[in-house]
Image (tube, rainbow, N blue to C red; front, side):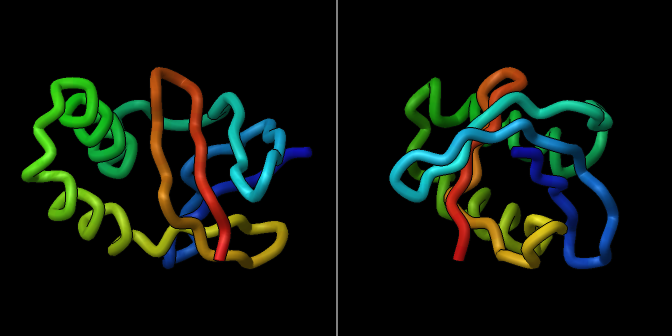
Length: 93
């Protein structure tokens, strides 16, 4: 199954070949601009998680949530999104 990830303005962030397990969607992010602001932000978040800089995570999560990311095909809001390398995982509201 493929999900197209878009922001609140309808801009395509990328596509994900996803597998769903217990409400968590994960897969490889493909066809995305590695220099886009949201990708940079997700990578920054990944770095803070890896370095266990937990005090700043809430602030970064708020910034990520401000993009209003959703799955285009089913118009579902994304939350708890994380990018690790080219692997994306998220849940849907």
